[in-house]
View (tube, rainbow, N blue to C red):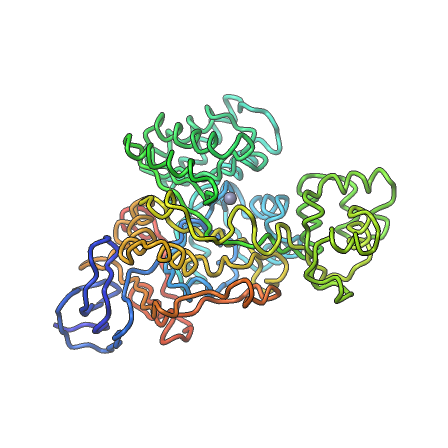
Length: 535
Ligand SMILES: [Zn+2]
C-alpha cells in the first residue's frame, strides 16, 4: 500500500466515543485510507509517540464570515486543533442581497468598524448571493474548513429594516422565505437566530416556525442565540418547542454553564426525540472594546447625537440632555474596567474604584474618559472573568450531559486591528473545555466525541468528525499533558492574539497546516455543505 502521510504510534481517539488504542493512520488524496495496525510506504511519516491522534475539532459557533475574506490565517483555531468552523451565527450572515447591504448591516450592528466597512468595500470583490460569496472565498482560499448558516437577523433587517413589527406582512414573509430558500439551495447549513438582538427579537415564534419549515425541507439546522429577555429556561423551552413543532434539528448556542436546569431540559427533549444539542463558551472575559468601537456599539442602539462622537468632535457632549441620553445607553457602568489610559494608576481597575478615589460620580468619570482620553483607551465590560462563563469546574449537569460541546463564539475582530474588539480566553475555548471536563472525570474518548462527531452529526458533515476509512483527513495531533491556555494570572490581557499550546500538528484535508508547531502557508481548507458536499 502507498500513502502520502503515515501517522505512527499515536494514541488514536477516533471521535466515536469508543476506547482509544495505539496504532497508525494512513492518508491519501485528502482522505483517511486506513486506521489501526497498518503499515504503508509513505511519502511522509509523522511519529506520534506520546501524542493523541484525534479528528480535527469542529467549532460550531464562530463569526469569521468576513475575516476570511481578508485572507485571515486562523492561527488561534489551528493551535487548538480546530479544523472546521461553522459561521453565520447569532442571526448575522453574509446574505441576502449585495455585499454592500451586508457591510451596512454589520457596521450598523457594531460588528465591524466603520473603517473596516470602507476597507472591505474597496478591496473585496462584491457578491450578491450565497454562491457568489462562496466564490469570493474560493478565489482567496482558506486554511480552515468552513460551513455557513443564514442569519435570521440579517434576513429580517434586509426585508423589514429596523421595524419593530411583530409579524411580517404577507409580502415580507414571502420575500424572507424566498431568500432563505435560495441560500439553502445554494448550500447553507441552516438558519441562525439572535433573539436577544434587534431585529430578531421582535419576531414572534410563529415567524420562526414558518421560516424553519423551509429549513426542515432541506434537512438544515436551527441554531439559536436564545431570547434571554424572557429568562434562560423559558428561552431554551422556546427553542425546543420550535424544534418539536417543526421536527427539525436544534442547536442551542453558547448556553451559560451557570444554568444547569436548562441543560437538563435539553437532555429531556432529546430523550423525547427532539434532535437537539448545545454549545457552551467555557470561559470568557468581558468584551474588550477600544474607545471608538465602544462608542460605535452604543451608536448601534441608534442614538442620534452620537454621530458627532464617532467623528471625534468635541461638541459630541454638548448638552446635559445629550450626556444623559448617552449614559442611559451604557450598562453596568460601575463594573467597567479601563485599560490603556493615559494614567497608569487607572489601568486595570473598575470605574467604581477610580471614581471613589477621585470622589466623583461614576457617570461623570465615564463621560470625562470618553471625552478626553486617548484613542487607545479600552473598556472591558464584565470584568476579566464574566460571571456567566466563569471557567469554573462544570457541574454534573454539564459534564454528564452527552449533548454539550464547546463553541468559542470568537468575536468578529479585525485582521489588521485586532485590539479594537476582543475577548480573552476564547482563543483557548477547546483546551479550557477539555481541562474542565477532564477535571470532572469525563473520559478522554467522551470529551473528544463531543467536539468532533457530535457537531459533525448536528451539522450533517457526514464525512468529518471521525477517524475512519473514507473520512476527510482532518486530524489533530496533541500533547495532551501540555494542552492548555494561560490562566487569569498568566494571561496578558492586552494581547488579543494569545494562543493555546500543546497542539503539534493540525492536518486539514490531509495537509499539515500546523506542522510540528509551526504555521505553514497552506490553504487546505474546504467550504462545506451537508452530506460531504463541497461548495
Ligand atoms: Zn450569540
